[in-house]
Length: 402
Image (cartoon, rainbow, N blue to C red; front, top):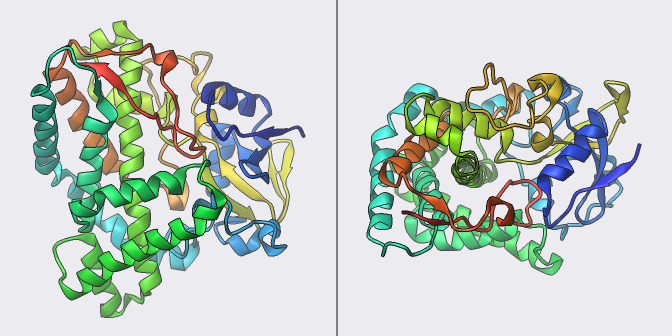
């Protein structure tokens, strides 16, 4: 099996995803830093593995970890070993840690946030409208970033004053280019920041999910301080990064396909279709780290060996022709059915999927209603990805609002 090295600079994500798919449903890959693992790259096999009890989240199953081959200053250590939370456990512990979060993010409860999301969206668009006409605007920084960050912060009880520091730390957390000597301090700083937030909520609880997690722990659900802090960090990180990329990628896709954009803006195709096709075709999450095989697991005609690590390559499996047919590589807002798994599958499916869809479902039509003549300021082919192997994330999105 030929090993495919993932590009730490993410210079050609589409090409890399195509190579992963061509390698078969199970590809042998090398993560930045020289760490070896396997990637599932086809839709059907991904669904199978995401519900296979032999593939677990416990990092102690990983043979390379047991042998001490994974250094603590590896740039991706925070994603491979983020501490104890619902992301890193299975079975009973996973259900215990996930229950409160899942209950807070049901479709019905998320819908109650709509008015607040609409108000935040309007405020962002008002700021954009006040800018001089003809001036280039970074739509990611000025629109796509503030909305999900403000929404998830309000949900979790994070003060807006912490946003600049969080942005700085999360940039380092996700990047493959963070110098190894800075990784331990960055991880410590993130932990200290979220510990401070939890301590403040314990002293002065509010109507937010962090306070609810603390209260549940005190009422007998037995969440440790580490579990509360790590859960808060996980939700804030995942709760804004994915939605930023979803909004940005949808704008790029629409601007690159003017005939489809015309049908959407004309009301012929619902915005829901745009969101689902963007999630499939240019998924916000390119690779999800990391699961471990407790025994040999057959994947098609290959084997995921016992003790090896597995990543899920959503960027590759989102364009799997076996699932989506010969037009899998095309952006098509009329695609039906569109049964992608961009938010995962099985017990660890993303609990924030409904919230992300709602935010994009409010933000995108409001953006185009206010600025129907919006144009990319540079060709889509010149937009640059950030050096983040897990997130399909652009450096910026320069536009002219028209």
